[in-house]
Image (tube, rainbow, N blue to C red; front, side, top):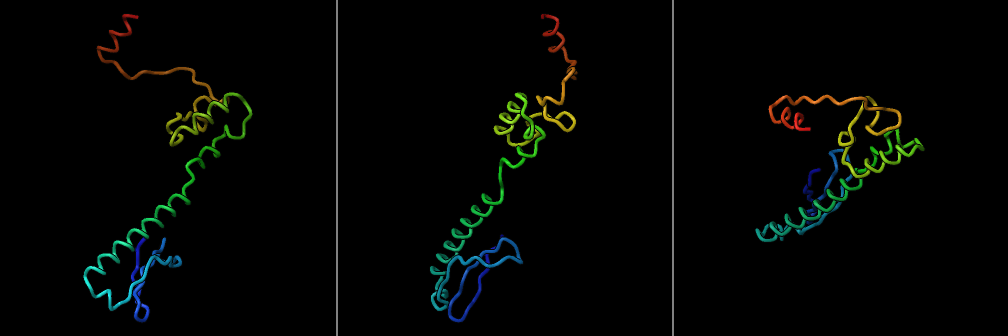
Amino acid sequence: MPVYFLAEGSRGTAVWRVSDNATDQYLCGVDLQAYGDEKVRERFAELATAAADYYRRTHVAASVDPAAWVSELPCSDCSSPEAADVLHRARQAASASELGVTGSYVTGCCKSRVVGVVSGGSDARTARSAARR
């Protein structure tokens, strides 16, 4: 998402593009005679950077829907109470990996069951804590 400087007659303009083939978004302009002054150049660069940052944030915020993956879960089309629980947890998570995936279903889905858990820990602390129970 680069910023370009274009000279148009006696005026220089800064434009921002999402990509090389996208349309220009005008950021700011400066008279080319004044642009010869070092302070004017510095201020122009600051202004162009601030305006470009605004458009970058706006573009990223508009193009990313954080809840889009939730509607793709199999539970989003289901009416069971388990589906409502899964969707509630999904809306609080950043991705499906935080919910635990079993096959193509999320853990807690009415279409999947957890039948056992295998612990990989065989150190002495695990053995002692299990023996005390």
